[in-house]
Image 1 (tube, one colour):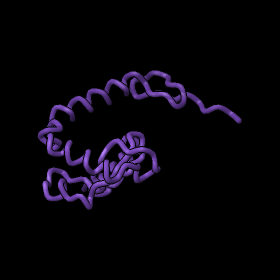
Image 2 (image 1 turned 60 degrees about the horizontal axis):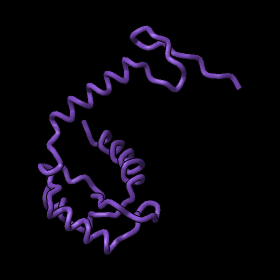
Image 3 (image 1 turned 135 degrees about the vertical axis):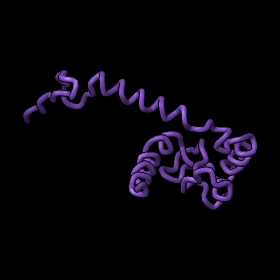
Image 4 (image 1 turned 90 degrees about the horizontal axis):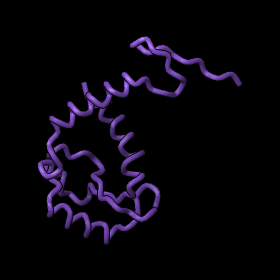
Length: 119
C-alpha cells in the first residue's frame, strides 16, 4: 500500500503525513491561551465546595461510569448548564463518568453538538 505524500503547510514547510507543522501548533496554543483568558475560573462557573460535596455523595450512590461501567471518578452534566444554576443543580441531569470517558468521547460529542447549535 503506498504511503501518503507529505503536504505543504501555508508557511511553506513540508509536513509529513499525520503531523502538524510547528507554526500550526503555535497558532493553536495562542488561540487556546486567548480563550482561557476570557473564560471564568471553575469557582466562578459554580464548582464550589458545595459542588464537591454533592458530587461525592452522587458518586457514592452511582459508583460506575455511565459510558463504560468502570469505576467513576467524576460527575458530569448530561447537558451543558452554561451558567444556569437550575440546570447545574438538577441531579436528574448528572451522570457518573470515569476520567477517560469524560475527557475523551463525551467531550468530542459535546463539541460537535455545540457547533451544530451555533449560528
